[in-house]
Structures are given as C-alpha cells and as structure tokens.
Length: 93
Image 1 (tube, one colour):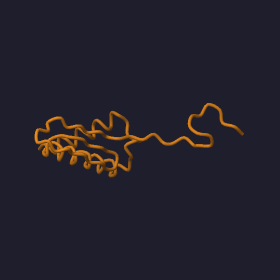
Image 2: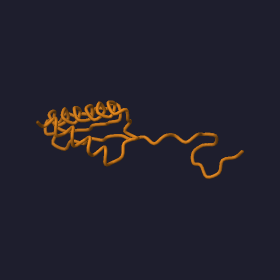
Image 3: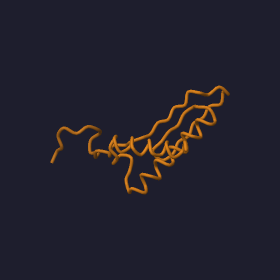
Image 4: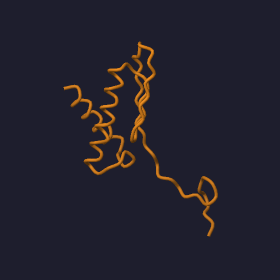
C-alpha cells in the first residue's frame, strides 16, 4: 500500500519532533568565543559569567524534566515557561 501525503524520501518514516533550547549571550567583551552543546540545548556567546549561568539554567531545566519523567518535546510552551522561570528564580536567590 502506498502512503499518500507524506514528506521525505521514499520509504522513510516520520521522525519525532525535536525541541531544543537556544541560549544567546550578547555581553561578551573579552573576545572569547563560547559554545556549549548538551542534551536539548545549544548555548552561544556571552561573558564568562553569563555563559556559566546559561549552562546552569539549561542543565537544571533538563534535571527538572527528568524528575517529571518528561522530554522537552512533550512539554507544552506554558509548562516549559513555568519550569524555566522557576529554575532562574532558584539560581538567582
């Protein structure tokens, strides 16, 4: 049976949607180029302090998702926002 209306190459199955957190720091003045990739995230730029804060935030968001037994793809934008704001609030205390 031939599938109609699917995209991609012949015989390929649909891939799951992928979600990715992207952090961009714009306060770099020392000339260093910073790039960090991890599970579900890519972080670019920033001062040493800003980049470290983005790393901590991304890692803690992933830890929270793991505790909830969820993936980033399974998380609604509203739930992601709530998790992110909670993590940032805890980091800044």
